[in-house]
Amino acid sequence: MRLALYTIPPKVDREKLALLRRQLIHKRGGGHAVQYPIHCTLVRGVEVKEVDALLLELRALALELKPADLKATTSLIAGEYWAGVGLRSNAPFERLRSRLREVVEKYALEPLSDASPPHISLAYGRGILGVSKIVSPIKHLDIDTMSVAVEDDTGAFRVLKEIRFGEA
Image 1 (spheres, rainbow, N blue to C red):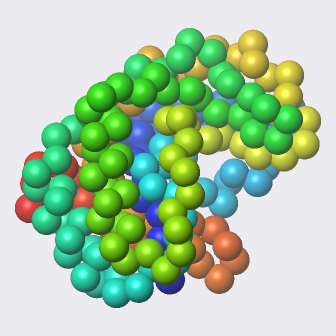
Image 2 (image 1 turned 60 degrees about the vertical axis):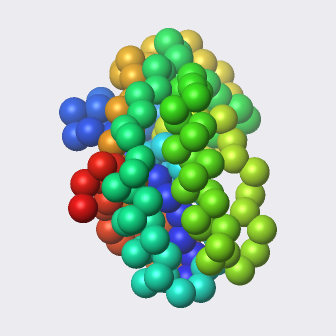
């Protein structure tokens, strides 16, 4: 099973980001990201074994982890095929992501991809370049929950389970 770890913004921020996503798709034709929930990736998709054991270990780790908060950059960042909201990394976030990667690596059937700078992906597709003047609708991202997402038959990732940090 292919699994990824995300954090999904709170509903009020998701709604703001969803509006921006729809604008990007409408103006630029970048509709490929709609197969993913609006999220910040903590661990990229990887083929894993023993999913039940992995979930138990992630739940145990979540009890020890503290929420993190990332400041958003002021404007949208974009490349030729991608657009999203940049997030400024910090030590609590990097510790959190490192601990999660350590657990997932034990169960991974392939090497984990390098961690990318933190961001919230909004759209993929041709024509994304040139949207960098759009202002980010959020100021920061509270990370208090991890979403365990699994790849379905269509290649889309769907949230299987949400686990709050610091709770059983």
